[in-house]
Image (cartoon, rainbow, N blue to C red):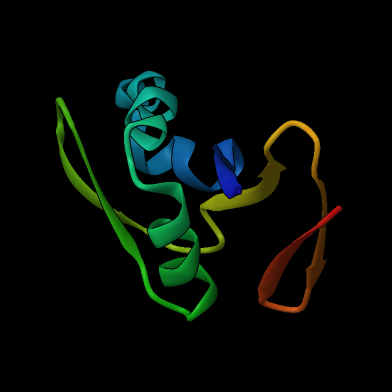
Length: 85
């Protein structure tokens, strides 16, 4: 019922990734967004493989946007997310 959109913080990742930054949005879209969000919210980092190598990204590099399925309102309480109808 609940997913996340992983949005790059280009100010943070742009200097490190260079031209490969163009590959980041599709690479993030291919990840399990819920698992990635849990990792980032717990202070961990996620690995993303691009043409120029593998990069570790943390919560400073990725913005989490909550997405609910149609017909559900979504609210967030701290690090937890819960759907409501």
